[in-house]
Image 1 (cartoon, one colour):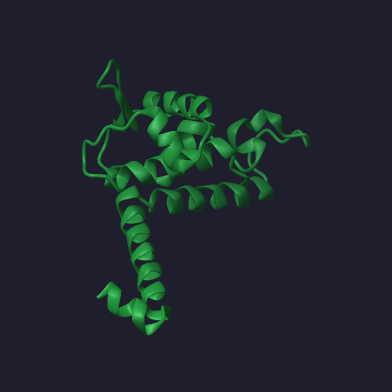
Image 2 (tube, rainbow, N blue to C red):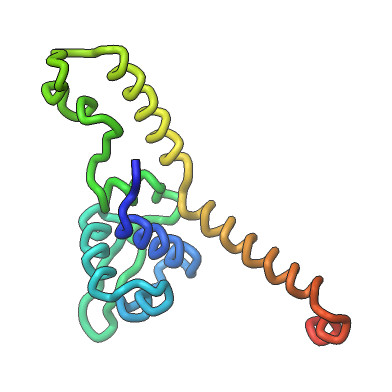
Length: 160
């Protein structure tokens, strides 16, 4: 399974909004600039996220976008389904009649992929954006600490 660019952008957009104080609105233009995403593409993705009740759209002068749900209630699985639709690893998982072998039900390959699909969905649902935003913050803090630690002594004194 390979996720498309729109899904990658959607992950970044939701992660950024999850890192802001709850209820913070941001314009599409500002979000596009901060995340280096083409604005027209961002707006298309936002429509998918809004339709899935992940984002909320505000119109007018004070308009923009905000998360519709708390970051802890939004998972990687939610984003993938919102942007890519229902994804299946094997055609027959979605449409048993699509089997080129002519199977009308389950075969060993179907059973294997059905289990893999369940495990993948379970794993994707276990990652929420509150946890991901906290991890992102910890990574940035560690990077900053590493920069300070590797800086010459005079730079360290300035940082303290």
